[in-house]
Image 1 (tube, rainbow, N blue to C red):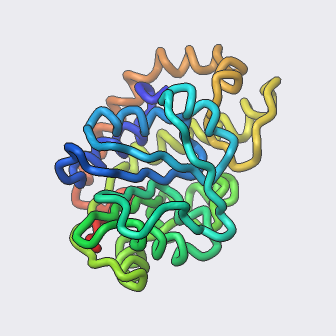
Image 2: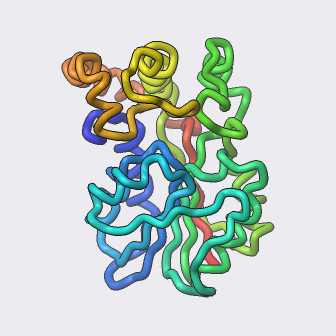
Image 3: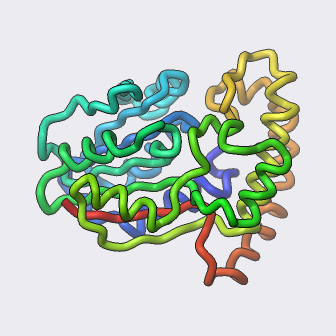
Length: 258
């Protein structure tokens, strides 16, 4: 699934551009569902000594099976991280903040568990409500709630203010997944949420936009095979993003330092 995902591959590539040298570095990765461990698996191959944690229990068994390592279940209500002060050289938080009513406590926790001089990287969907694809999503019923989010996301200035309030120093930012990629992903998510998940023999929780387990994938295997055949066309269309490289993408990354 990862090898047929446009945005997930872009996400890993974007993160790699922000990672410091990871050799012998203690690293933390926080996620919040919509992840079967493939992103963790790819990131692990970049080096570093990683600790994995997720705010949703649903995907953890699959993540642990793929990684062969434990994945901690975090409490989204308290946002407290079960780690010591200054424990990690690098803390990465992938698409968590948009799931939380108040993202400041977990941001402060990221700062707490990162050593002085260490790096904190945060990714979220772009929360700019004026962007065209965001307006299209709302028009067809694929708003934040359909994705299991509490809000559309955060734009770079929002994340900069949030991380600064948490005691971190902004260093740089980036983005990925511009209009063409976002629309392709929207079409795939719309098909799964509005049609395939409702016909699935395997229960699919609200807010799930793609299969997160082997059983869910097997329940839509015919549709997935069709998508696999069409994937080269999707990939070519997504390359049109280069024509609008001057625009900010529909997913953003900020790098901060403690």
